[in-house]
Amino acid sequence: MAKKSNPATRRPASAAAALLKSLGITAVSPGVFDGEWSGSGPLLSSFSPNDGRLLAEVRTATPAESERAVARAHAAFQTWRNVPAPQRGELVRQFGNALRAAKRELAMLVTLEAGKIIAEGQGEVQEMIDICDFAVGLSRQLYGLTIASERPDHRMMEQWHPLGVVGVISAFNFPVAVWAWNAALAAVCGDPTVWKPSSLTPLTAIATTRIAERVCRANGVDPAIFSLLIGAGATVGDRLLQDRRVPLISATGSSQLGGRVAETVGRRFGRTILELGGNNAVIVAPSACLDLAERAILFGAVGTAGQRCTTTRRLIVHESIRDTLVQRLVTAYQQVNIGDPARPRTLMGPLINTDAVLDMQAALAAAGQAGAEILYGGEPLTGPKYPGGCYVRPALAAARHDLPIVHTETFAPILYVMTYRDFDEALAWQNEVPQGLSSALFTNNVREAELFLSARGSDCGIANINLGTSGAEIGGAFGGEKETGGGRESGSDAWKAYMRRQTATVNYGARLPLSQGIHFGT
Ligand code: UN1
Image (cartoon, rainbow, N blue to C red; front, side, top):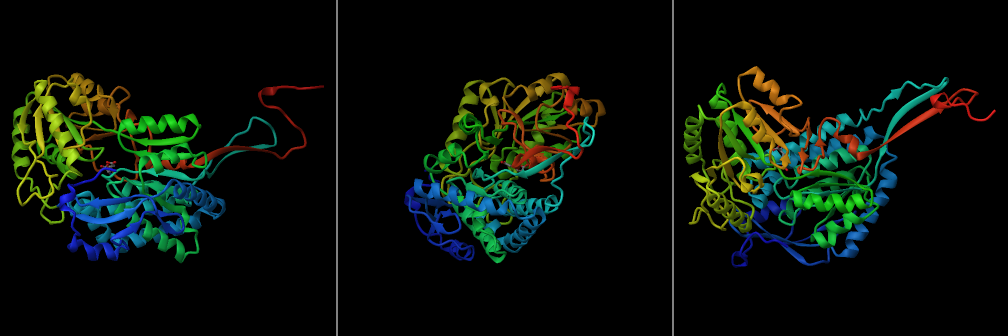
């Protein structure tokens, strides 16, 4: 399993000990929850990317424990599906309130374990609270249609039933929010979740599951509806993908991971929700308000140290304003306070591990070899302010739109800048990459704005005018096209993926008219 740090820095993080304890995490914590806590597989160490120190260790799942967890979640489904949806919503309401009460501590754990700055750690927990609120309302709105029947004395309707156990595979960069998008919706839809979090962020998953467990126990609900399986992909992830008792797998990660998930789950006719790579562009047109564009690009490209799937990775700027905007961005980048994300004034924390630093260096080297020019930053940061080896300066690089590396998602703060002449060209460049998650256009020209949102405009799942590519609200459906995987999570009608649709017809007459006017028999 990937480690975040050199084992030489393996010392208990004493400042963090009280926080961990308040969240129910011990020096060696069980990493399996299926109604009870267990874990007898290999130990997994969680290091903070902020300083390379050990936070705690986790006992991972064995194959037998993985199997038992799915069996227990499946058993919990037999009961949970019969609970009226508004009552399921009441449990989620209480879970949201428990998250409100624990927001500060849980957010700080996100900061310690995932390296997000405090404001973003809190934003992440807020995103969980928001989806809980959304799911509570939804629990009274799992509407089906009534449909006009062509046959006399017939009533036709569409019903939505609970689907079954949902496997949730989440990534390190949103270590709890993306699980909550799935788990809160699944819970009101009548489905238990079995969660396989990233091996880089096991502690936030344990802390969150402990909160969910408490709420379930207080309500006499089988807590196996929020099961947790921490462990290696081969032990936990692959089993979930192959298990027919898990009709839906919701996976967040790279497009490479998603391809494997789609293939394995598809082979057994399971469903998937895939939320994979992004390579999101901001187009800045001549009429744009540069103040807005500059701030949105800074947040989009540097926020979360460039480790969101919605991170702004490409800037497509009109030649008439290119130099002005680049100059503004260089000045803004120079002012970004990089360092310990637990300090309130820090704007950018570390990358998740030293491998991510190497990936960033490799991408910049590839860009340089292909003729890109580094306009700013890109170097790893060392020295006492930057312990642990994961800090970097965010990079701006002038690059051709069609370089292979520009078409690749590197999970790091690299913004490739390209200059366009006419809007159609900008739009073509925006759409030419394999990924299709998020996109943004800054313009005050109504024709450009409407074209961008039209059928021949942005091909992404998210398209914004005069706001950036990242930081979507939970109310909309979240996800994207092409190699982003096509899944939708969170708001709008994303809940439908967690239920099975049934078209039901009732004949309340005394005859048996056939559809399509068919007469059969005498
Ligand atoms: C992700 O990076 O996997 O829109 C999710 C955003 C966040 C979610 C990102 N609300 O940036």
